[in-house]
Every structure is written in C-alpha cells, then in structure tokens.
Image: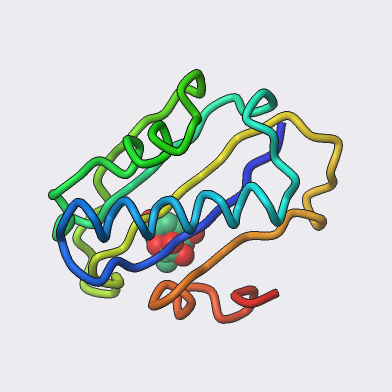
Length: 119
Ligand SMILES: C=C(O[C@@H]1C=C(C(=O)O)C=C[C@H]1O)C(=O)O
C-alpha cells in the first residue's frame, strides 16, 4: 500500500468549479501513477473552510469511482494556508517504491510544494 498526495485550488466556491478542479486533480493523480480504481483502498479529500458548495468526493464518484471508499474532511484554517484549496490522498496497492510516486500540485496549490510541483 502506498499513498499519493495531490492538491489544487478552486476559482470560486461553487459546485461546478469544485467538481471540475477535483476531477482534473484526481484524473492526473491516477494517470501519472498508473492507478486503477480496483487497486484503491481509500481516498481522502480535504477542503479548506471557504469551500462548502460541494463535496469533492462526489466528483470522484461521478467520475466513476463508485465502489471506492471516499472520505471528506475539512482542513484547518491556518493563517499560512492557501485559499479555496482541495487536497487529495489516494491509498492504493502497488509495488512502486516511495520515490517513484508522483505527487500532483495544480494551479495555486503549486506553491505548497515548490520542491516537487511540476516534477
Ligand atoms: C502545506 C500543506 O498543507 C498542510 C500541511 C501538510 C504537510 O505539511 O505535509 C499537509 C497537508 C496540510 O495539512 C500541503 O498540503 O502541502
């Protein structure tokens, strides 16, 4: 079992933007790491407190991950945080080593991990 991290910002607190950016992020995480939904143990989503118009997990279910256990939570309101930010952690069965995993930071979330964003 390994985990891959991802984060993205959302333009506005509305369902359409939350779904579009969550779908973009989850698809990139799965594609870059060759993740099949059958191999996923669970996916955890967090939203910053300024995003409450939709559940990011619902976007992943709508995308087709109907049998994957999805869980949503709220990120703490840190003064150092990035606004309107969704984070995703996918836990899946893989033989990849820790160093082979490609973490994904999109849009305004790239500032969170300048060391690895765009790798
Ligand atoms: C700085 C971030 O946000 C917070 C800090 C994290 C960390 O230090 O690993 C992870 C998630 C968030 O609670 C981030 O997502 O990179």
